[in-house]
Image (cartoon, rainbow, N blue to C red):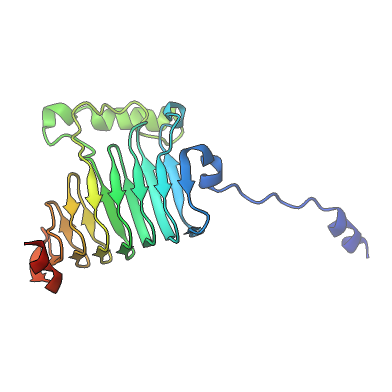
Length: 214
């Protein structure tokens, strides 16, 4: 009996705030779109966030994705009727996804290089990361030097299908209706209405609609 009384007065634990609730001012989606409970938006330098929308999502979407902004820059725009099974967007420039796009799980879309390809330009990166990790409680990119890191926008046109574990790299445009095979690495533009696969991804099939683009 005493236990029952104590349970009545026991304070209920407040539900955990999601990252989208925390960063509500920087994120926008239509009411008809559903976010998976595992979806997440992350700002590695929250003190530098600009007063704008970093993520915009259209109507009738089913979205399971991570949106990562390692600096104050970047933007992700997603159209209508888009289904994302498990995608990580890493943006310092701009990533745009059209309408009626389908993506499977384990996909990474990254619009920058993270580090310079030249040793002289990246030789201090690890030391900075180490110092930031200690100083900022595990956040290792607070003072990262981005001046030598190349970034370019990514555009995924409407009606595209991307298979599981694919990677889309900076500067790529995936043309309308194209299909990207599972585990492919896409480093160059993909023509509309083609199927590409492999690392690096190459055309393995032309779809019937391809003729109408010529």
